Length: 187
Image (cartoon, rainbow, N blue to C red; front, side):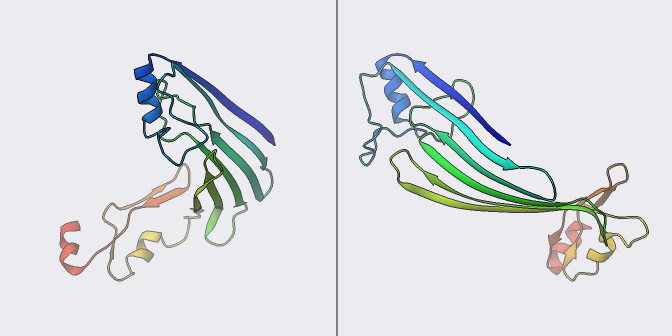
């Protein structure tokens, strides 16, 4: 699957209002090291774009994706919503594996991970990131519950309890590691 989503913005106003926008933490046009999007105190409009371009394989057990997100230095949508940071290019590589055939203790599970980098429109590498997650739906019929298993782990207490939803076959719990003084407060 290949798709592109994009948005364009243009804000107009007084020189004073646009200077405040250019100096905001979402833009920082006044930074001395920013030589590609300069502060212009006489500006009365600011235009930019943001979007996503992605190429993904989303069928079968193994799923893959390559995505690029961008927000140009002049992209300004704070009148519509929330813009934390403009001036970003973010390439992402994503891999996921899904198993939906029940085996052993699970009914299904998913494993996903992605890596990304941030660049600004001046070509400066700003940062990197890594993310991963795992989810599993357990078979609960005829098996000891996870609550019974976890209660045997030393220093673990299930304060919020364990929930098995019979309709969706999903289970969830909140666990805390406690020392002996905290244990009574939880009971």
